Image (cartoon, helix red, strand yellow):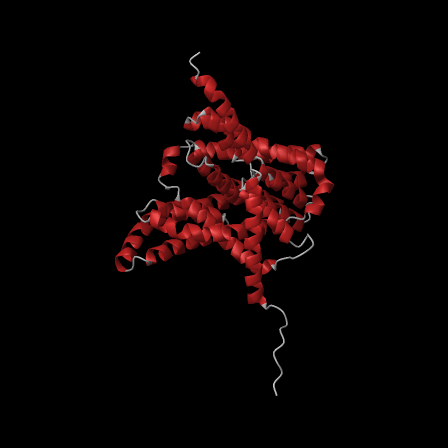
Length: 402
């Protein structure tokens, strides 16, 4: 007589199903709750990740199994964002996105460096504090921009291009500084030459892809129209992988791939099919960032965290206020909210902080990066709401004939 099977708990695959369901539900609840109090859905999803993370009591997800889904979600999100931005539009923007990105990165890095020195930190830890503040969060900022209603106003394309360039510039600066700070540093010219070579290869990759993809999609459409979606998505994943191999942000590669697809006649069709899939994985990505945050470590560096958040916000916001009116002729009421979308920091800041802790720079980097990420993620929405109220209050006065 055989004994009945005894259930011994979920195996890895079963656990992933449970974790995925819990994350989707928690992210949706968090996002909806934050939307009701006029805060970004993405921040609510991030808070849901903190609740489900290993540093808070209660149910904790099995992070290694979810990490791959989070990466896939981020790539999908950036690919669909790129689908709404024709890559040919970059040529019309001129040098303004580069100026905005470089000025924001430089101000953030120098501001963080000076702040660290002012708080008595040694030069290397202060340098890493500056690095933490450099990179605007591509995924979070573009998601907030899309949800805000400002994504279609004049100047939004400049903000989008600047954020993408910002990510590459910030990561290049990090590579340069880390290369010099390593136990066996290379000469600065060697590090710089390597960076320029990698950036050149990435640009060549995008150029070739933009010319090779359209005929491939047309040939695919003539044989099997339903396969166009798969070919376009595969192209996005391959470009993301190539950027990662080159040491550049794979999310930027996904965006460029999406914008290349958008420049073809198949852009609307691909967007219509891929966007719902990206929406499912988006909650997983933002929740996965929350998994990394230990809220109990932030009070120990509260004063420096407040100061770093202020520096991070001002270093991106002020260049936006100065450059947007001159570069794109943005209306006065849209300048403030558009500039505010340059403020959020997230994934790159945490990666830099984690690396600094790993090589023994200082253990305070991670809680500061966490606090800066939370503080800067919340700021764009109230700034945008204030700008709308201010514009509405001024409108009757401008139209009043008396």
